[in-house]
Length: 123
Image (cartoon, rainbow, N blue to C red; front, side, top):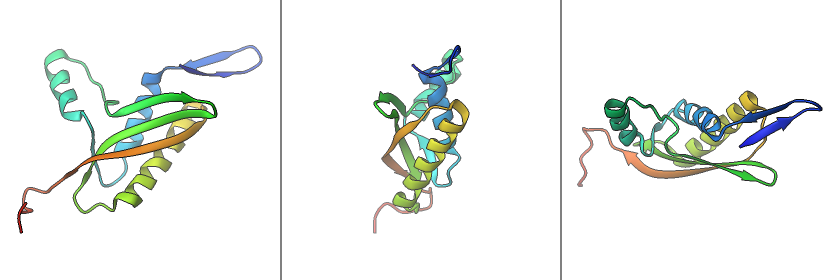
């Protein structure tokens, strides 16, 4: 996918590696409940023995670096703009520090809010 190129050496980093780094960084942010598709991944892990923590992460190569889209659910009561800013910063820092690749943008897509079990749905 993307690579670093010194005078004589080239290091390539796969999209899967970048996705896993981004997923772990996003899930560490307080208020992030889960990445979208995580339930399906638990079923896949249970029945097929595979683990895909990076579900809900999309990586694209842009002119100035990587573009990362993160699809997630948040906890009820989280301040979404603050949470999104923190996820963006955390993911960008983690991917750049671990891989050495430039991250041009991190887009956050909030797909749901997880309600606590004791919160009534009607007024």
